[in-house]
Length: 275
Image (cartoon, rainbow, N blue to C red):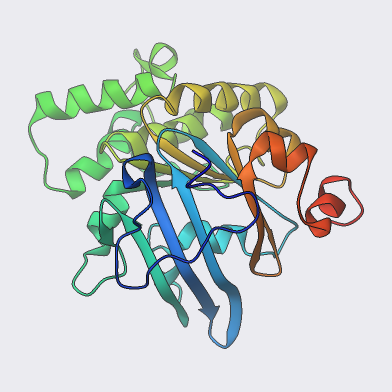
């Protein structure tokens, strides 16, 4: 794994070629990614790899670009008026920002769960989980039933809601709503699951359930999580990237980055001298 996850900053990838280094172990490779909100340059030359079936955490102080980066990874950044992206993100040998690539299909392959639980307010628990499949034209009831149960089981929510699937999703607790959103993302069988501060609005018990869930999900999915809770990053991730002022300062195994950071800015952040 060391050949694809360098200890400080990942090497530049060839601009017009899929990443050459052991691609079978890499779920996603980001190459020289830049992002803007209008004239505000918020991400600068980010290059990072996400190893398959591992949890990769992105940490850094507020406003450093973590959420913008993760939204770029499934083409959500571009839906903001005035926002733009330059660079390449490779998944399965395809640059998701390549000409003719359908962003809707990208978002099916790369699921997203946001900071605040956002179940669709007018839909039942069942319909919340099935929403993505229906959007993609699935109407077969048995297929939908199987996908809803699978998604809820993978999100560790099935036993809690199996007898009230027709009740509103908004009637669940905050932690259950967040797991419902995870189930909704998983129902369409993505390859990669991205979570943007998924526990920031949850109590410690609900947070512990989400963290336990992440350990289970990485056996089937590649997971990227944004968090400014460094203890959480240490608990759930195998790899961590530290961002500051729109730049990737350091990237490596979580154990190494937290115990022996290579950059003094990383050490200063981890030890609480700023943040």
